[in-house]
Amino acid sequence: MTARGIGLVARQEIRTRLRTGRWKILLLVWCLVVNGLGLLFRLALEYGDTSSFGEPGVPMFGGVLLGVLVLTLLVTPALGGQSVNGDRERGTLATLQVTRLTPGEIALGKLAAAWGTGLVTLVLTLPSLLLPVAEGAIGVGRALVVLLVTALLIGVVCAVSQAWSALVARSVTSILLSYLTVFALLVGTPLLFTLAVPLTSEHVPDRYGGYSEDHTERVWWLLAPNPVVALADAAPRLPERRVVVGDEVISRAPESDPLGSISRTVRDVRAGDDDYGSDREDGAAVWPWGLAFDLALAAGAVWITASRLRTPLYRVPRGVRVA
Image (cartoon, rainbow, N blue to C red; front, side, top):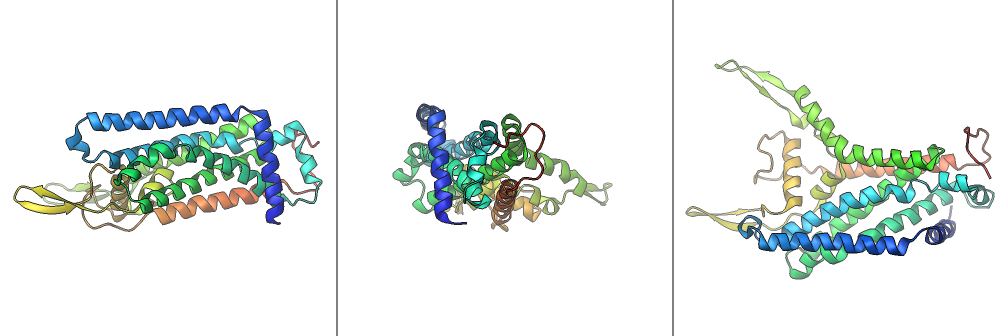
């Protein structure tokens, strides 16, 4: 397996995408819609209750980034969900398989093309994302970290979508399964956590008959693979700001930071603290476990794709076209 072979497959895949679809128009519409919504969100912050938001650049960056993450993950399955079975349906996959290209080169080349397209959609959202950075509300380091994590999560979904494309004969089915996988990561993980929390409760007796105490520290790992949780918890913390409370001056994290609020909540969940989102000392990080799980999922998906591209193919599923 060589970088040259991966590059050849990626370039061929990109040329095919450019020939078969109106990508320029779709990307232009994506850029206008996402950045337009981001600017409208900024106007809403500026003309709304400024006392609740403080500096509008902080909630704008977090809110737009979370929206971009969710929208990009919803678009990404269409990029890799038909990369393998779509070529089988068109009869062009066998042409690659009879060359000197290895299954790993074909799998990684197709993944690079889909991932590259996903990164282009992320780059097109930078005007609204980097506005708070240009204003000085968000540091450059924090912006780079969250963009890197977002790029990795896009690659994870591309790899999983491509694996479904290699496993399932029909492209429509593989795209549907890819969307279900994204739904499971975004919605299924918090739903499982919510259902699992009552199972961890213990009865604590007292003079009034007792009460039920939840132990979220036993099931916090169900939230870790969630892309929103991994992104928010990986974001470096904003510097604390001094706030006057009565006659006392205290330091606390900005309350208008969506990323920081989610991060404090999941860390309190891991620590088993019922005061979610409190301003106490930070607990143990959740994002290393979640990001490691997502990257392991992507690695397994690439391995599955490469194994399904090996030749000779002794068993052909019903309805699958070889050449």
